[in-house]
Length: 461
Image (cartoon, rainbow, N blue to C red):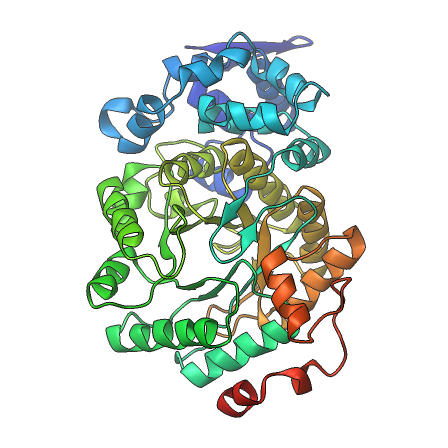
């Protein structure tokens, strides 16, 4: 299907829905690198105007990645809920945007709709929205998940403690965890990115984190963010695994480059459900994504990176995750050049994930060769917190000593909660109050280090 839009004396032609989506995307370096971006701002506006007139149903009739050759496309189309889609089935993209912003669209309506929209539909809609539109609509949608703590409740902002260590030293990891707990962080998950995939080191991390949570009855979850096959091997050996992790993408080819398939993810979820550790949750998966991963693997099929990111959420949705995390600025300036592009991408990702019914978090971050700084992180943190993001990162000092990038710190989450009147997960907040770390308003109490249980202080410090 071809599309056209005239502005003054100039008529712009777009050869396919895929071409139209790419040209309508707000400027970002990854689409320029792929050679699919609009050549001028005028062409971008023309594409957005044409896209606004496209019926939502067109995305069920024309796939941006061929159905016959891509299992992600088949997953999206074959699992589409037409009954849930009916309330908006007659709308165009522009009309859908107007409905999302209306008072008639509330949390209940969005929740009922989630299974009826495809990733391409929500990606297309985001392309004609301002930042404030993305915030306002995402704020309406709450996606709540529960394990030992409950994540995603209204007026709550959770954090992941990310206690990485360049040599996977268990004592160093635990010291960073304790540092985070003292700041009241960690209610979403304590998640370590390992330096290697050595089975013995991974096992030591899994057991150390599990003992910490069990011994001190901390209402949170743990995760070692290694490859899904390592999780399966460790589960067979009886490792105490709460969440099974995997990075995912929006095409079959990019997932293949990660060494995974949809069948493997299904196997991992089944294994996680069969070996649940002290909880009854059906949500045992933790996924991470990021705009640009498909282009990095030459697996993008000339589709813009933001649409492919939304398609990754289509994969995630199928496996009912506890957490999904867009690591928004991690891949580098080749894909998101600067703070402005990172800010826009973070709001898009959160919006698209929420509309698809996902418990979205964002790692608000940038690499050291990117044209961004901590002020950009502050800005995006505040915008996402206002939009109702489920969780953000807590990295010691904002500087990840293993991965070599900049993120948000424990005290950054304190700022966001103070600025917007947000609280932690209720179970975790109760634990902090019981142990003397916070008062009944959720405020940190002084001398938290001295309030650590004597046994924990002796063992860890």
